[in-house]
Image: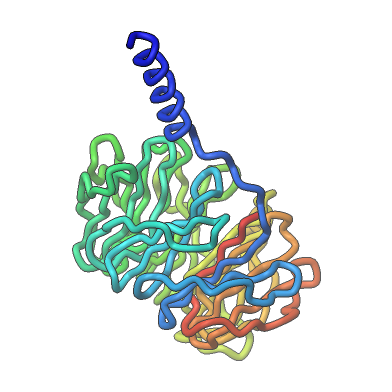
Length: 329
C-alpha cells in the first residue's frame, strides 16, 4: 500500500506541474485581427493575401484588443455585453470571458500581476480585474466617460483619459486611486507613449490636436494641431495614434477628416497627410514599420498604407464598423 500511495502521489504532482506550468509561447503567425463593432465578430486576415482566414463570433460590440505577453491569448473588450472575450490564438476561437462591469471599451493588461484595467464609461471608473479569479477586485473613480488607458512599464502607474472632464488622470495602482490630474485638449481619447518613455501623446478629438505630456513632470509640454488641405477644422477628430519603433515618426488617425497625419516626432511638425477611409480611428503599425493598417469605422473597411512611399495601397472590406486592428507579429 505504501508503494501504491507513493506512486499515486508522484502521478498527482506530475499532473499538477503540467497543469500549472506557464503557457508556452506560440509561434508568431503574422495574422491580422480586425474587431467589428456592429457585426459582433473578429475577422482574421492572412498577412500576405489579406484574405479572410476565419470569422470569430464574439460577444456584442467588440472593440479594443490586446495579446497576452506570450501571444497565446487575445483579449477583446465587448462593450454591449459587459465582458472581455478571451480568444485562443492557436485555435482561433473564444475560450472564455471575463466580467468587466458596464460598457468596456479600452483596457490595459498587467501580465506580471495578472490584472486587467478596464475603462468603464457609464460608471466613471476603471475596473481592476483579477484574471485568474475572473473577478473585479477594485473600482477606481475617474472623471466622467473614461476611455484611454495606458499602463506604465513597471505596472505602478496607470494613465486614464476623462472625455468629459478634458483630463488625464495619473493613478497609483498600488494605492488604487488617482493622485494627480492634468488638463488636456477637448475630449481626450487615446494614448501612445514615445519609445523613449519620456512622453505621452494624447489625442483630443474635439479640439483636433495632440496634447503632449512630459511623463517625469506630469505636465503638458506641447500641442500639435492638424488640418489636412481642403478640410474644415470641425472635421478633424483625431483618435488613434502610433509610433515607429525608433520613435522618429508618429501616425495619427484624424477621424471624420478621412486622413492619417504623418508627424516628425523630434520637431513635432506634421510632414504629410495620407487620404484613407471614412471616420478613420484605429491605427496599427506592423512590427517591421513598413505597413500601417487603418480602421475606417464608417467605411466598413481597413486601409493598408505603405509607410515608405506614404501611400494607401489597398482597401480591404471587413465587417460593419471596424474599431481596431492588431497583428500577431
